[in-house]
Amino acid sequence: MLRKRPSDTERPPRFKGTTVARLIPNMITVASTCAGLTGIRYALEERWEFAVAAILVAALLDALDGRMARLLRATSDFGAQLDSLSDFVAFGVSPALIVWLWGLSGLGGIGWGIALFFAVCGGLRLARFNSRLDKLPPYAFNYFQGVPAPAGAAIGLLPLAIGFALGTPDIVPAWAVGIWMVCCALLMVSEVPTYSFKKFKLAPKFVLPFMVLIGLLIAGLASAPWEDLRIYAPCHYPSPAIRD
Image (cartoon, rainbow, N blue to C red; front, side):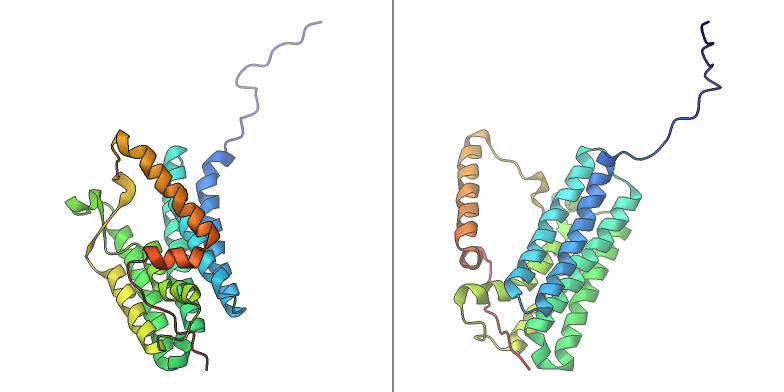
């Protein structure tokens, strides 16, 4: 005897949820947060090279999450808020604590104040960006307003990387690093247009030389990372690494 086929009204409702693919951008954002916090752990253990590398990994992941969201069509308000909170932790709080543990602690209360100033400026920069998403100036198509948080964190940690490369971490006193961190913080909250490479285009004839240059850069970073970072850095501040 043939069973009667159930009607559509008798079928159980299909499970509605979010696919794993649409969660990938948020997973990358969480990984960026974990990388930034891991940098603090390495700093507490005085493994400074790993601390800086953790922030660089967080910056790389931060560059990927937005692109993955657009590629998978998984952009959402939740993801945007999560990304901002992640940026504040990974590129505001973590670099400030790393630099304070490494050298600014030698300045006492002033050094701690500078670390707080850097972290607060990172949070203010992100809050301003979120509040102006619907009313950005015309130049925002190719430029950021002020230095982005990941770039600000990388610039703030530049004295450590240069100190690793030179092998003499106590060349520059802690007060010079403090001034450097204050300048980096002000750049993040400034209105200075900072070029964005998101719309950067290459002519077809330059694609191959560009890829060769990238390959050489990666090879150099793999063989002598801190020396190459010092060569390509825009400024040459060494590191203080002053202890109490």
